[in-house]
Length: 359
Image (cartoon, rainbow, N blue to C red; front, side, top):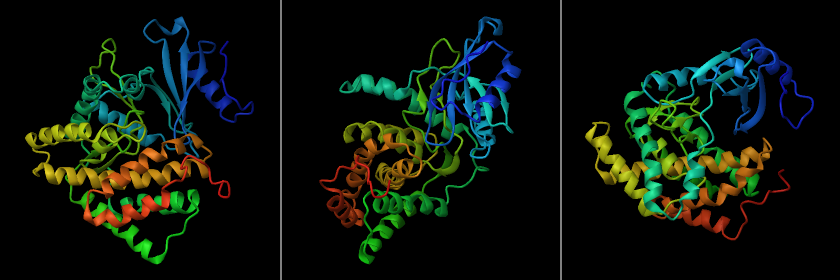
């Protein structure tokens, strides 16, 4: 018999749906599950252990549970196929049911890029070796994956993302309401970062291309490149967005000189491929301001994940994300005043501490 779901909540309205679907798909009594992970959405993942009757080549699969009243799996399935057609390694789909919100897919393993990077911190050559396949995959993704028909990373979308910063970080987490003059500074920074994003060549944008969504390739799995997940929100947008997500990762930090070297080499590849026609100075400005837009947004998202969704772990990453924001602001005249104000506002605060009055 199957062992059911290893879940803390004994009354799970999805449990029966999942068990019946797996019995139908894999055979009754030929599987059991264990919790694999959850992400920042309403999705959750289970590792499916298949019995020998299912064949020696499939010992483990991953089940995505995406409640259809909260999540739509159609974009995930469509983007997965698009990336696989471009030669990238996304999970192979073994079965899916759009009405139930269930996908049974290839198990890409547990060799997360983030874990491997943390093991070699302080060893630049090894870090560089680990990053190279992910940079290669990003280049292939941008060059070979069609995206003109995807939603545009438009001005309206960029603005909506930036508005998460004052709502969830300033107001909810810090309990602070900006004055009229401070709002002017905030809106000025929003404007310059959006303008820089809109100037860039447009490509396929994963939107969450970082070390927690990349699994290291296995020479025995038939794929040379890293495994890529969490791509369902892909859009057609700025060429530096995914690059800054990867190199200025919200979960691990590298020296600015190292980031600059990676970014410079990537610019050279794009230049040679005809994907950009700008000099390095312009590309770096795009990169910096794209990072500013992304990290202001992330300050809001990480706070929202706690105050709205009850996921507190992301608060621990706020100091690093804020450092990225302040670092860019100190480099450009258009953002100096905003950076000074934000530094004064947050200096000495424990950003990882919950605002109890808002919780």
